[in-house]
Length: 255
Length: 256
Image 1 (cartoon, rainbow over the protein chains, first blue to last red):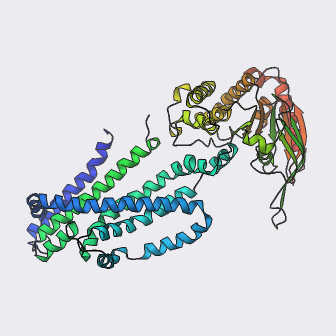
Image 2 (tube, helix red, strand yellow; image 1 turned 60 degrees about the horizontal axis):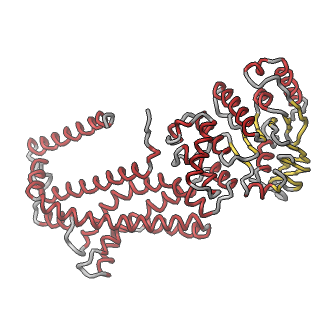
Image 3 (cartoon, rainbow over the protein chains, first blue to last red; image 1 turned 45 degrees about the horizontal axis):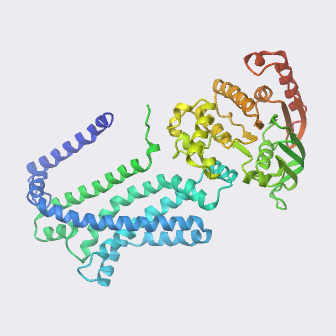
């Protein structure tokens, strides 16, 4: 921890300087608040609206979390099946690529029409689909990359396919799974927020941003954007923490 | 009973295709119980292929491989041998102890006994204090020792090693050679050891089997009897005589 502190100083310093520069630019340049509000104005709105920001962040966070968990589960299962059956591998990777090329957020209005307007399912569905691709591809790569020495060793131990999968393939793919999850965690928040722009239930950060902007309350819109940013950061950091907990061997315990 | 009997074995890779390779031709080799045999030869002479045949990692094209009186496939399923490669091949997500326990785990041996056996083996290779560490925290030499402990964990009558010390520095290498000899002496394990270091082969072995390439075959079998297998043994005239004999046998092969 003591070693982590000095490495935190440069980015913190940079952040403070950037904020100060922004404030000066807006004040000295007399920039109209509807073009770019000052950080102080945004901060003021954030403190005034903190209850609302918190509630909206909770709603969006729940959507992002459920989408992330569901998407990850499906992606891992699909990767397991794909690595197990060669035929499935040949079919599913191009299929996944097509899925990824789809502008998934653009599916939101269609999904919104499929469900009731009070349903949270469309946003969660969009999030799950967005999450699926990075997790699936990374996990699949991990499952396929088995050290040939490990393969031969398990063969000499006369290990069954199942034993091999559980004792070698899965733990070996954990690192790749978390690489996918790290990408997916931020994507999940973005998807959950942006999906609201296209209708459906309006209780998250996305709808707050659009409605504040519609009322020309730009500092307030920015306050919600800051909330979305913090939410994404939280997701990312929690994923990093989980990664450390799940893979204790990646840490250097001794100097 | 002999530890390994290789009878008239031929190995052809990619048989019947354009890139067919005759890897081993008419190989006969017998390794006695408790004997330490080294396979030495230039790259491509099939020494690793021969080891893989004994381990039943690849099948022989013709001929038979018998390990401890059983066909190689049955011997593998019964874990009648331990195997160590040039790369330690440890599982990075398992602690050192868990790595050594793995072959025992797959044999269905109970937790308490696994632990005792693993600790015995780790003590044997001098790593008892590192049981709780992860492989990533160990040096290359220590990792290789863990791999040897793992190969010995099922107390196999036969140890197969493919250049296990190849990636190590000279100091560590000599240290591990002495350790390996004392382990084999204590446990009475027969060993087949692939190397391309002449001095390593002579120092370790009761017999050095010299192979040549294209096609891979055995060209000489040189019995080694050193006065002692320690630093004094490394300085003895017998040691240097055998080194000369092996290198002559290696050179006697016309280089293509």
